[in-house]
Image 1 (cartoon, rainbow, N blue to C red):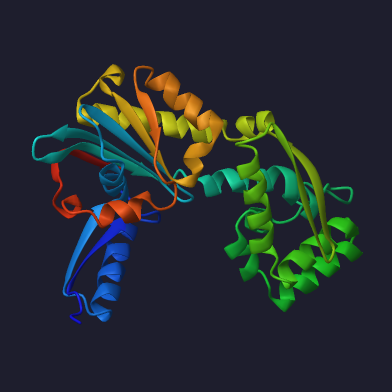
Image 2: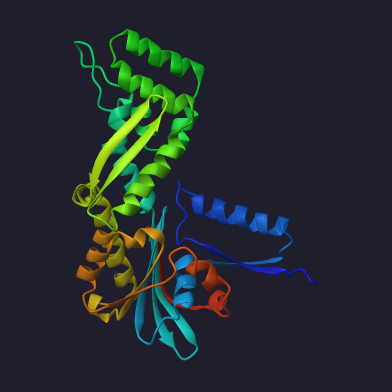
Amino acid sequence: GVSPEAITLGRPVRFIGAEGADERATTRLRAAAALAGFREVTFVPEPIAAAYAADARPGTTLVFDFGGGTLDLCVVRREAHGLAVLATAGGPIGGDRATELLIDDAVAPRLGSRATWGPKQLRLPRYIVNALRDWHALSALNEKPLLDALDDLVRAGAPKRELSALRSAIELQLGYEIFQTVDLAKCELSDQAATLLSYHRANVDVDARLTRGRFERLIAALLGEVDALIGSVLRDAGLAPDAIGEVVYTGGSSAIPSVRALVRRLLPAAATRDTAAFTSVAAGLAMPGAAGTVATGAENRR
């Protein structure tokens, strides 16, 4: 057989990270493709690929690609030659942030995030508390000096139960397991009003009843960011909300009921359609024409 020399890769509208993150990420992807033998590399924003997979209907469509790490939006119009991209927008608004908020609320207190001790009401250092929601950061704490320091805090009066749980989470590298358990519970709240979060490993014991109402209050600020990004992409496209005829949803986080309710409120005239949440981008990238989509509007990487 003949090895292909060209590849089309999906990318978020904006890669998350500090200044220069976008350029670094695309450079690394291009280098990886070259190592795999591809001479020609084309990048397509993921919501544009999803628009192709959805076979956007006549009129103007907003593609709402809400995944774990980013929210990517694309306004497209079906024209005779194919899809015209009127505007794109993207930001670091993802379902993982919602999961982290649940960890802060339901798990971190069991690991000492709110513990105080002694006459001066001492607390855990902020960098440790912040790491509880980020399993990468929690893993990085697994060093003997820090573990010894936690033991010293217990001897100084810090609550033994919570700090023993924290020590187990760090030493046994439980951060990822905890994140996945909470993420699953978050997903269950899309289908039911309440669920039980249960996690037991070593000294970590969590049993917490989670409710959709509480979850929606926790993510209120995140929903505000979604609201702002939708407004931004509409302005860039030069469109009023009632000009959007259809919203196409993709990405697992797009199933969150309060997210759907927000989009309905902002775009009341739009019909809604779901695509395959986890495969529509890949399907769109494989379709003829995706790599050559006409971009007539603005790109907004917030």
